[in-house]
Amino acid sequence: MRIETARLVLALPTVDFAPRFLRYFEENSEHLGPWEPTREPGFFTEDYWRARIERTRQEFATDTSMRLMLLLKDEPRSPIVGHCNFNNFIRGAFQACTLGYSLDRRYVGRGMMHEALAAGIAYAFAELRFHRVMANYMPTNERSGRLLRRLGFVVEGYARDYLYIDGQWRDHVLTALTAPSPPAVANRI
Ligand SMILES: CC(C)(COP(=O)(O)OP(=O)(O)OC[C@H]1O[C@@H](n2cnc3c(N)ncnc32)[C@H](O)[C@@H]1OP(=O)(O)O)[C@@H](O)C(=O)NCCC(=O)NCCS
Image 1 (tube, rainbow, N blue to C red):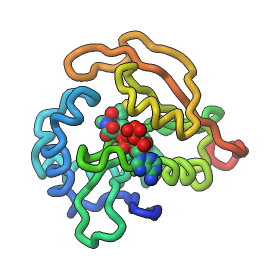
Image 2 (image 1 turned 180 degrees about the vertical axis):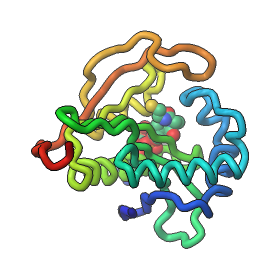
Image 3 (image 1 turned 30 degrees about the vertical axis):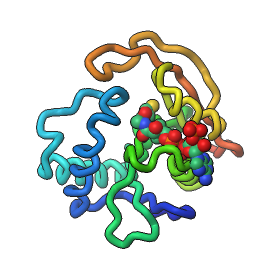
Image 4 (image 1 turned 90 degrees about the vertical axis):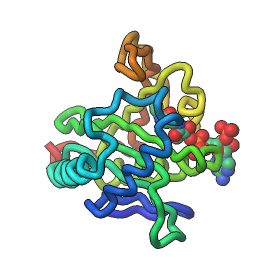
């Protein structure tokens, strides 16, 4: 699957993107360190990324997650400039998923993640028929909080010691966005 915006392509990765994922996470390790979980063993190897991309594709095929890479639309051999992950699909009466994202440090501050998420969320509501997208951020992550507010996410709560990030359990602000026209659930249970 593939979504195009003014400047970006959002796409499900294929295994040949493994070296580019590795480069993205190597080059952004300091930028992402304070906001992301401790890396699994092997995370900084191409083998890890080949296996992870295969899992990503399988999870999309089995309606479990939609993990998308962000590429520059005008560059045929674009590096990965970010990713947005719609995780933890829950169907039935909930029809919800959890959103995570990050952007290459060199592209922050240009409205690119807003552009990517607006399109990704529209796809999640219209094509995947979700009713709720949830996103949680650490209170110190002001950029992420601003981005979610601009997208229309509403604060629903505050969770103490919510996720183990950068070596400690961290509090998170819980937010969510609901579909403008809620889908009937019968066809997705
Ligand atoms: C969170 C993160 C993705 C936000 O990136 P971002 O570039 O600030 O996000 P946006 O796409 O909303 O861009 C908004 C910024 O671009 C600026 N901008 C420039 N051109 C723009 C345009 N055409 N349209 C919109 N905004 C534009 C805005 O003024 C704003 O800058 P400001 O916050 O300094 O005022 C990024 O900081 C990141 O990768 N952080 C590390 C990982 C992380 O925190 N992940 C989330 C964990 S919850």
